[in-house]
Amino acid sequence: MAKELFLLAEKIKTIREQLGMTQAELARKLGLTRSSINGWEMGLSVPSTQYIVELAKLFRVSTDYLLGMKQGAVLNIDDLSEKEVSVLLDVANCFRARHTNDE
Image (tube, rainbow, N blue to C red):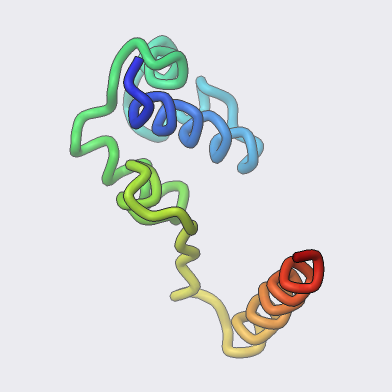
């Protein structure tokens, strides 16, 4: 399997699990079968462009991130308050500072 397809398969599985979602739940949300999701996660098939866009919306990441074109994930903060955004920025900065200090 090509490296890019492996990365897509891994990202779908990882993000789904991080969201506490089963393959069956993800399949229901997308109007697919569980075996379709399993095929994506095993690298046996690849989601169509339509489903890559749907996955990105559902997972709240960019299509570039799912496809491995960007290293960092993108977090959609549109529905968060200013205080919630501020808290997230503080947490991210703490992690960045810790990683800088570890180097």
